[in-house]
Amino acid sequence: MSYKSSLKNPIFSTISEVADELNFPTYVVGGWVRDLLLDRTQTETDIDFVCIGNGIVLAEHVAQKLGKNASFKVFKNFGTAMLHYKGENYEFVGARKESYRSDSRKPIVENGTLEDDQNRRDFTINAMAIQLNKKHFGTLIDPFNGQEDLINKRIRTPLDPDVTFSDDPLRMMRAVRFASQLNFTIDKQAMLSIKRNAERLSIISQERITEELNKIILSTTPSVGFKLLFNTNLLHQFFPLMTKLQGVEIRNKHGHKDNFYHTIEVLDNISLNTDNLWLRWAAILHDIAKPQTKKYENGHGWTFHAHEFIGGKMVPKIFRQLKLPLNEKMRYVKKLVTLHLRPITLTKDIVTDSAVRRLLFDAGDDIDDLMTLCNADITSKNETKVKKYLKNFQLVSKKLKEVEEKDSIRNFQPPIDGKDIMTLFNIEAGREIGILKTAIKDAILEGTGKNEKEEALQFVINKAKELNL
Ligand code: CTP
Image 1 (cartoon, rainbow, N blue to C red):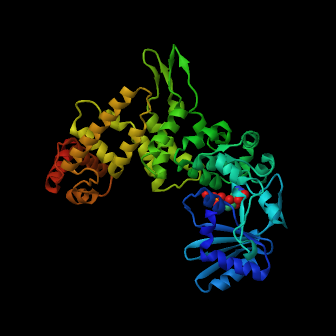
Image 2: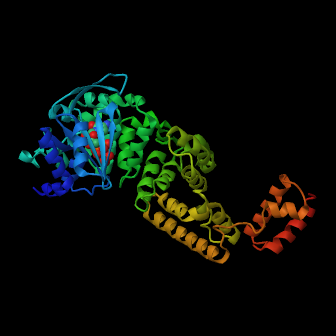
Image 3: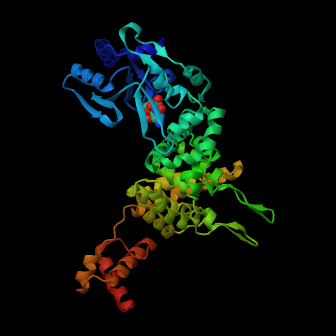
């Protein structure tokens, strides 16, 4: 079998020798075996081993055999040991039988057999083990027919799904994550069980939920995951705001688009062009304020006035709730959400250079990402319209390029700063400085002032007189 050639990595023969010396039946297990059988590029370098015996003792002996290049850490509470060797992580655990209490993720643990260990894993495709002891080296032990599920692209639990998911409710998120990453379907029983147990997600920390969510967002077609999150009610547990986008209201025969399905289509579109998680997050949040701003106006139909500004303002709170980073990533997403309609205003035939300069100034180095978002936001079913919009954005990109080449606005810094103004007038810091700084910036962006120091100083003197400052 071809997978055996992947066991040529010397780590496997070292573990095999140590396992025989200790007389511990030992197996490589879990995600690494799954990815091996799927022939999937192994993105992460974590490999899990399980033995019938003491996993920490096994790891200690393996570390000794590997010599000084191996480092080694024990997690006593979990009964596991992590070995780090040549850039790879190897985790060792003794086979266990675990049962969980309904109010906690903390299991009651006893020693167990390989079968016990496989029973308590999340999915059949993650419960396959390959033996490493010399006598049976390379034998695949697959009690739940995970191989067939790989062929049929199916996510199924080894035990009754109610048991598997109540042991660890995060597995409901993992089911959706694997379905989205691998383009698999979740087995009907498991799907029904997730719907029944969705509320149990409440005992899982937001950090762990968001870790899975980000993996869903980074999959090739993330809408697969979001539809499942919505249909199972998982999304309602941790991100109810996004579920509010779903639905269409009709008044006087006017409907608006379903903003949930529109959003995940935008997300799929943008995912064709970027693997940047934060740009994908901007796609998820670009219309988040549409439900709040929705209004039916006679003669106009549905409007969503200022949804981009209100949406931008909502970003920090959403990031805090979802335990996403509150740093420059958040500010980047906020900026893109706030600006996402601006390029549309530049699609008119006649656009002043100053409008183009203002957008370049506001977007700075994120202008290309903003254009990627705007292109992804075109989801019309009408091909002629799509072509027209795309062509318009190409023209906007051209204008942006021309003006940037001419005026270098992207990283624009005004030619004089607050200190220069204070020295010029011999005054202390105060609100006048801000007013004058904004006036210089506006003049340069409008094209009425040059981006040059002497001229800016003269401009400030005139402006101060004019405003009686
Ligand atoms: N596992 C589980 N229940 C969980 C998490 C993990 O049963 N909630 C088991 C599965 O057998 C899984 C293995 O532990 O294959 C390793 O978990 P992890 O490293 O989190 O995931 P992988 O399956 O390796 O997948 P990936 O590397 O893509 O995260």
